[in-house]
Length: 160
Image (cartoon, rainbow, N blue to C red; front, side, top):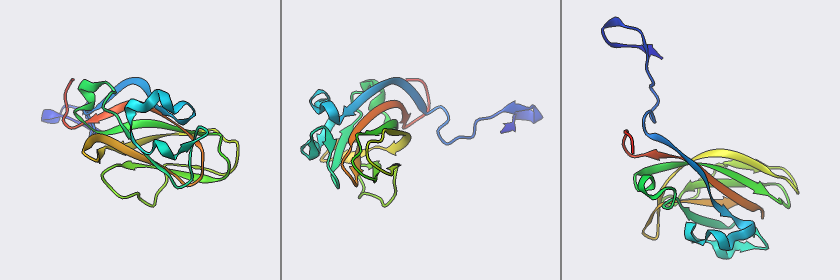
């Protein structure tokens, strides 16, 4: 958008996230194929993982508190790249805040077995059993799930 003080033309960012979005070095917080390596990021639901796949109808709750901690404490949402791999049938993945009931929307869809697909998702952070900075992932069909965090949306603008 073009606008400015006193009639001067200047580019103005009108995004609601202007100065609040902070890129972070991409950090993997979940890979169900090697789930034991990601225990610090899993709040609940790891029992739903069998043979490297999150089971059909299962929910796993994750936290971004370790991405980097100084920024995560101020985060209200996160940008996550979610990948499904080793799909066994068609299905739907939904990423959502741990503070709300699972919505009837999808963040990533796949249509058959043996697929690898990914999508960049903005997910609001919430609280799970008193643990803030968390979000949930639900899958309708068993699949391996990989989650990488690449950015945080902070509660207030500025440099952190």
